[in-house]
Image (cartoon, rainbow, N blue to C red; front, side):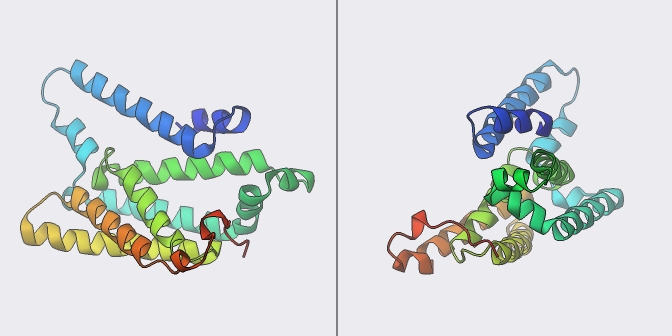
Amino acid sequence: SAAIIGPLADRGQLSPETSLGVIFSLMLGLAFLFMGLMPGTKSGAFELLWGSILTNTRSDIIFLGIVTVVVVGLVFVFYKEIQATIFHRDMALSVGLPATLILYGVLFLTGATITASLRSIGGLLIFSLILNPAAAAYQLTYSMKRMFLFSAGFGVLSGWIGLLFSYLFNIPSGATIVVTSSVIFMITAIFSPKRKVKGWQKKPLLEE
């Protein structure tokens, strides 16, 4: 998917966000199509769609931990390059940064994160869990660094609260985590300090 999204965002008229939505819809449709064509039981396929963090094996947790360390490490090491590509891609190219390669790298890191989280959250819900913490963080800050930190914090908080409610009420953990992240976003949107500042919607992230 990342290999398809990259050229669409790079050469076409679509933004990366729109391209991601189109590819997500396509992959979801293909998933249901192939599920219908599969002979025999489909329990494994449904597990990837809906997810169940409580059924993760030790190898799943190790794989998720490795992906987390790699993604966080790469973002930390190449933070300035990623920032330059996101804010001023033409300028990044003019100073010799491989902006296209960096963009594709970010997309592949996103794909790796999604792949590592499929069994825990499920394909139907992972898009929401990627979007909601970041959207909630943006309600509180214009700083990209603080947005990264807030987004990670909201993601962890969603996981802990979602698991707690899943255990207490015996409901699916993946869906509960996503609903929790949506509630956190709504709370931050309601009490966002940006609502008090006229025209805050038009202000971009600060390049810190």
